[in-house]
Length: 128
Figure 1 (tube, helix red, strand yellow):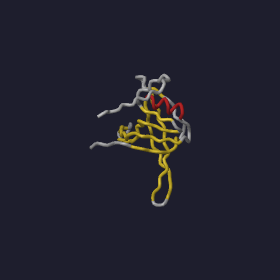
Figure 2 (cartoon, rainbow, N blue to C red):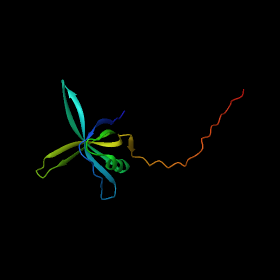
Figure 3 (cartoon, rainbow, N blue to C red):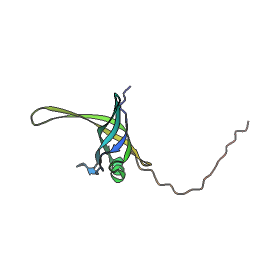
Figure 4 (tube, rainbow, N blue to C red):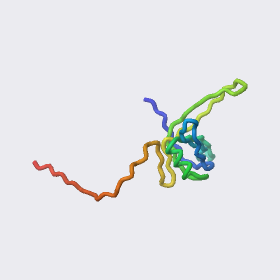
Protein backbone atom coordinates (compact mmCIF):
# COMPACT_ATOMS: atom_id res chain seq x y z
CA UNK A 1 0.00 0.00 0.00
CA UNK A 2 1.25 3.49 -0.86
CA UNK A 3 0.16 6.31 1.42
CA UNK A 4 1.22 9.95 1.52
CA UNK A 5 -1.42 11.84 3.54
CA UNK A 6 -0.96 14.75 5.93
CA UNK A 7 -3.45 16.58 8.18
CA UNK A 8 -2.23 19.75 9.89
CA UNK A 9 -4.17 22.23 12.02
CA UNK A 10 -2.64 25.56 12.87
CA UNK A 11 -2.59 29.27 12.10
CA UNK A 12 -1.37 31.16 9.06
CA UNK A 13 1.81 33.09 9.76
CA UNK A 14 0.82 35.87 7.33
CA UNK A 15 -1.72 36.64 4.63
CA UNK A 16 -1.07 34.51 1.54
CA UNK A 17 -0.69 36.15 -1.86
CA UNK A 18 -2.13 34.66 -5.04
CA UNK A 19 0.57 34.13 -7.68
CA UNK A 20 0.55 32.69 -11.18
CA UNK A 21 2.96 30.44 -13.06
CA UNK A 22 4.18 31.28 -16.56
CA UNK A 23 1.64 28.76 -17.92
CA UNK A 24 -1.21 30.52 -16.08
CA UNK A 25 -1.77 28.20 -13.07
CA UNK A 26 -2.72 29.97 -9.83
CA UNK A 27 -0.92 29.11 -6.59
CA UNK A 28 -0.28 30.34 -3.05
CA UNK A 29 2.57 29.60 -0.67
CA UNK A 30 2.37 30.30 3.04
CA UNK A 31 3.70 29.06 6.37
CA UNK A 32 1.43 27.19 8.77
CA UNK A 33 2.26 27.54 12.47
CA UNK A 34 1.36 24.29 14.26
CA UNK A 35 1.48 23.83 18.04
CA UNK A 36 3.49 20.82 19.23
CA UNK A 37 4.30 19.17 22.54
CA UNK A 38 7.42 17.17 23.36
CA UNK A 39 8.92 16.08 26.70
CA UNK A 40 6.61 18.30 28.73
CA UNK A 41 7.16 21.45 26.69
CA UNK A 42 4.95 23.26 24.21
CA UNK A 43 6.45 24.88 21.13
CA UNK A 44 5.48 25.77 17.55
CA UNK A 45 6.64 24.26 14.29
CA UNK A 46 6.34 26.01 10.92
CA UNK A 47 5.44 24.07 7.78
CA UNK A 48 5.57 25.45 4.23
CA UNK A 49 2.22 24.92 2.48
CA UNK A 50 1.53 25.24 -1.24
CA UNK A 51 -1.97 25.20 -2.73
CA UNK A 52 -3.05 25.34 -6.37
CA UNK A 53 -5.87 26.64 -8.58
CA UNK A 54 -9.29 26.91 -6.85
CA UNK A 55 -7.85 26.26 -3.38
CA UNK A 56 -5.25 28.99 -3.97
CA UNK A 57 -7.97 31.45 -5.00
CA UNK A 58 -10.06 30.71 -1.88
CA UNK A 59 -7.04 30.82 0.45
CA UNK A 60 -5.85 34.14 -0.97
CA UNK A 61 -9.37 35.59 -0.68
CA UNK A 62 -10.27 34.41 2.84
CA UNK A 63 -6.89 33.69 4.42
CA UNK A 64 -5.31 36.21 6.74
CA UNK A 65 -2.59 36.31 9.36
CA UNK A 66 -3.47 34.20 12.43
CA UNK A 67 -6.43 32.53 10.65
CA UNK A 68 -7.03 29.05 12.07
CA UNK A 69 -6.86 26.55 9.25
CA UNK A 70 -6.95 22.79 8.63
CA UNK A 71 -4.85 21.54 5.71
CA UNK A 72 -5.29 18.09 4.20
CA UNK A 73 -2.68 17.16 1.65
CA UNK A 74 0.54 15.32 0.93
CA UNK A 75 4.25 15.79 1.51
CA UNK A 76 6.50 16.71 -1.38
CA UNK A 77 10.30 16.73 -1.37
CA UNK A 78 12.72 18.49 -3.67
CA UNK A 79 16.44 19.07 -3.97
CA UNK A 80 18.65 21.61 -5.66
CA UNK A 81 22.32 22.41 -5.97
CA UNK A 82 23.61 25.84 -4.99
CA UNK A 83 26.36 27.79 -6.78
CA UNK A 84 29.00 26.07 -4.57
CA UNK A 85 27.85 22.60 -5.66
CA UNK A 86 26.24 21.78 -2.31
CA UNK A 87 22.98 19.82 -2.51
CA UNK A 88 20.03 21.11 -0.47
CA UNK A 89 16.81 19.25 0.31
CA UNK A 90 13.43 20.66 1.25
CA UNK A 91 10.05 19.26 2.21
CA UNK A 92 6.73 21.05 1.80
CA UNK A 93 3.06 20.21 2.10
CA UNK A 94 0.87 20.33 -1.01
CA UNK A 95 -2.60 21.22 0.28
CA UNK A 96 -5.45 19.49 -1.55
CA UNK A 97 -8.20 20.57 0.85
CA UNK A 98 -8.18 23.60 3.13
CA UNK A 99 -10.83 24.42 5.74
CA UNK A 100 -11.25 27.55 7.85
CA UNK A 101 -14.17 29.46 9.35
CA UNK A 102 -16.85 27.30 7.69
CA UNK A 103 -15.20 27.50 4.26
CA UNK A 104 -13.82 24.41 2.57
CA UNK A 105 -11.73 24.67 -0.59
CA UNK A 106 -10.95 21.62 -2.73
CA UNK A 107 -9.25 21.22 -6.08
CA UNK A 108 -12.39 20.08 -7.85
CA UNK A 109 -14.75 21.61 -10.36
CA UNK A 110 -16.95 24.23 -8.67
CA UNK A 111 -20.49 23.03 -7.96
CA UNK A 112 -23.15 23.96 -10.47
CA UNK A 113 -25.67 26.39 -9.06
CA UNK A 114 -28.96 24.65 -8.49
CA UNK A 115 -32.19 26.36 -9.31
CA UNK A 116 -34.70 26.38 -6.52
CA UNK A 117 -36.91 23.37 -6.95
CA UNK A 118 -39.88 22.06 -5.04
CA UNK A 119 -39.05 19.08 -2.91
CA UNK A 120 -40.70 15.95 -4.19
CA UNK A 121 -41.06 12.82 -2.11
CA UNK A 122 -41.57 9.54 -3.92
CA UNK A 123 -42.67 6.49 -1.98
CA UNK A 124 -42.18 3.13 -3.61
CA UNK A 125 -44.01 0.15 -2.16
CA UNK A 126 -43.04 -3.38 -2.89
CA UNK A 127 -46.35 -5.29 -2.82
CA UNK A 128 -45.86 -9.02 -2.39
